[in-house]
Length: 222
Length: 128
Image (cartoon, rainbow over all chains, first blue to last red; front, side, top):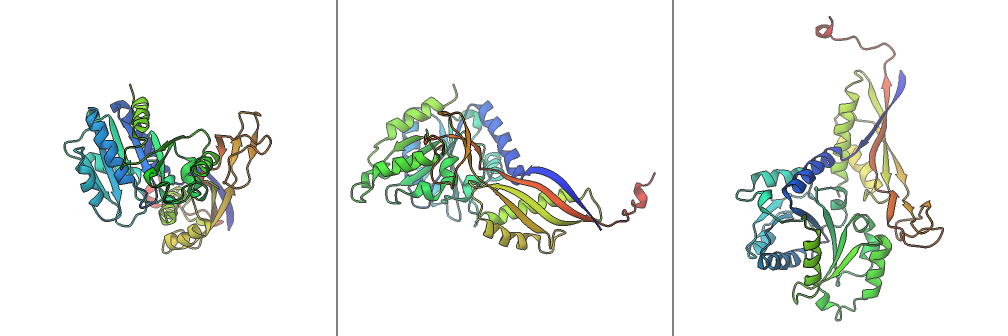
């Protein structure tokens, strides 16, 4: 028997990365800004997205959403109330979305074409670990945490926060009753991802939404 | 728990690469995994056993080379390894360092094959 070492130097998720790169090219040429929203279950991704879709629509922008969930279509039905096109992706137990799922659902989405959109939001499955490894072709990855979750979330999940382009703190209307330490939360986010844009929001009161919508408008391809 | 998906991707990729060496057995698969890659080593090892079972890779070991985070500091212009992943500060000058140079890798570096000493005969239909 002889032993041979074969160098591969190949990304473990090469297939996903290649599909994501193709999607990114398509998104760029269609002029659509794609965002991937990642948080734990219960952070308020859906409420935040619902408000975002409604406000964008009121401003005349065309936005749509792909919503990942393990089993139900509850979130998609909630979001559809905003009037924006929404499509559910049920992963049936898989803890993250991947680029293949995004491509497949875009293909099958009747009545929605990328060329007709300004924004596409992808609401990932509620999970702070696994989605951070899977590129979906997005331009902006958004890490979200609510004031009820604890200020040390960024320290516990550095993989996600460090790979994100923006951080959104949700439910700030509950900051006081929860004893939320704002300075500590902001400091922790900055320690893990220096220079990241941070938005402090409430989908309920609308606090911070203007700044967030301003950011979206700036980031949108000309 | 995406380690099973990761293990399955590695099995697919390595099986494809090993096809070029007929008769060879894969002894070891070597990975480079950054500390920020959100991969739990124990969990990946466990899933590796499941993913390789009954496949041509059954019995192959998985060697995981965990890479520390390296940041580039704009303030002092140096690259440094940081301890842990709790604070992205330059260990030399203490400034926050946003420029990540290493730490998110998820790569199959190499595979170790065991080949029989006598070359496997070329199948008849491929002989010219």
